Length: 242
Image (cartoon, rainbow, N blue to C red):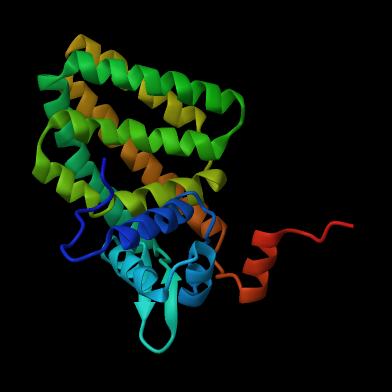
């Protein structure tokens, strides 16, 4: 699923740069609140600052960065209210997408979700939580892809970057994850195969609500403190090798 509808006039280079920065944010290579230097990004990508500036503007539309005049650009920092509202909005869209997908494309949906759940099981056994999080995102995106309703897709695109980032940034600290999440995913596949759409929506809604509670608990237990420039650089470079 495309991350966001690209405004006309943006260069393909800016879109490519935006995709790379988005991937780094979603996969927790950048921390919440971390400063993103146009100069450093341009040097890293070996491009001018213009496509970097355009890329950051695209990411601001997705809510993944905040551009503060005369200060700089920062990875978004959620609040408890943000987490709650994002999850509530997601629940409304996703339960309807799941209903349409299970009604119109049950076999294709179940097959796709089963393949993803198998990969999630392997990632869980390997204790690869970042990989599990990426597969989790793809699992939930499958509801929208199989619903075949472009307006639902556009609605989800508004928050999918933030949803994926919350998943990777906070799931590491969430309680009972990913075992609880995995069990829900297998249960939803069973309900799709049975054609029990009403129960599917109930399980999915409860799944998102528990995810919201876990994220909020993890957020409170691990207060976000933006990295200093020195800390960020040390984390990226690692220790000196003797």
